[in-house]
Image (tube, rainbow, N blue to C red; front, side):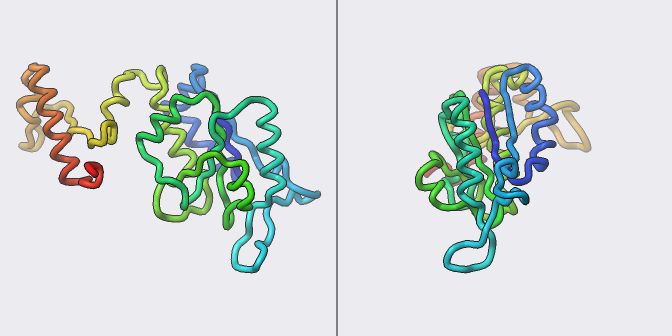
Length: 224
């Protein structure tokens, strides 16, 4: 998979993709992540990318020309399955969306900044709008990093144990069962006996029961 990210502050994305699982996946050529500085397409000597909004009001708006030109330059190189805009008023990102995007070949992600982007891009260019929650961030970079991480970990070969992602919370609309590791007893707190039994069927039954009970208690909305 190839992911191209358009940002007004590209350095914000240096760290998320330079460590741990995503770093290994990039080194192993399983995924390819490219961050593009929108200012390279800015207008005039000052490389302007924002302007006052028509009709007045507080806050600057990302201009249509720099973004359009950047998008067009990328479109000339390859076809994108989705052109995604990270925005608080987009569709709420969830595991089903992550699963769906993980099957794509090329994704483009646009990080909003300031008051947002010229709405004409959303009407004519953007194919998918995603929000990671009902709150506003200073820009879309943190949200984009979260989406990339959630999507890429599902791609075969990214994780050492490919079955691990399949047992994560929110797969099948359930929270994951509790997990434990050594020692079996600490400070008087014991690991459930069934997990030490070696009985695979009973362990799976226990995990399924715990998963359902935790979902009903902590996230009853997932059952709707």
